[in-house]
Length: 259
Image 1 (cartoon, rainbow, N blue to C red):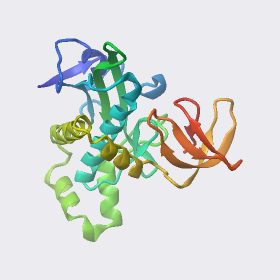
Image 2: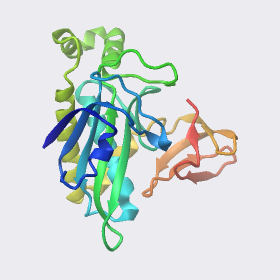
Image 3: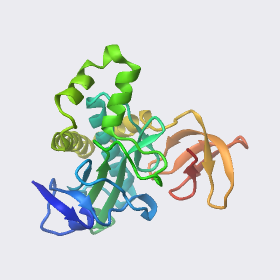
Image 4: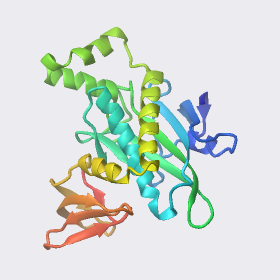
């Protein structure tokens, strides 16, 4: 079921309530304490975007396989954007980018079961849908509406469907976007549960942001280097060809992009 609120502290906090079961969606027009990656605040203008959490039964996954669920969610998001004619990429570890602009953030909250298995997971998602102006402290935001407008400017002869979306309504229908993502997510989850892990891994690899392209990276000690992403391992480790001629693997918080 879909549960809609005018305001919550955080949809992912609300989704922890055991009354919500597999497949339930908790959405809010505004979050007073929305959370992003690395403890950052998720900023969004009330009524313009999507902020929601989906409750999933993840008991078929071992704790050591939790990154598979993040990959599944990320692919469902890129699937959804593709439906709208937006070419999105998955920026390690859990952001979705269009070009070099962030359109979506993902935060997953796991509960543990017995024997090293997961129990249930709350998938928190923030999608910039209709917002066109952002707070100045946000480094590189974008939205679906902005990207559709940019694509029409770049490819006017190929943008009829996108133009019709924007001309038919002043804004994109957020409920429609949410339902589209929900369907894509459940398709991907069923693929994962049904033995389609190889498909998930291959599709994720194809969508990695800046794959096989030199990029600048920052280290926790303040150092920087230019390397080339070659892939992501099963535990979520990022493999980068280092300037010293070796391939190095980095875990979450051990390296970050310089955009």
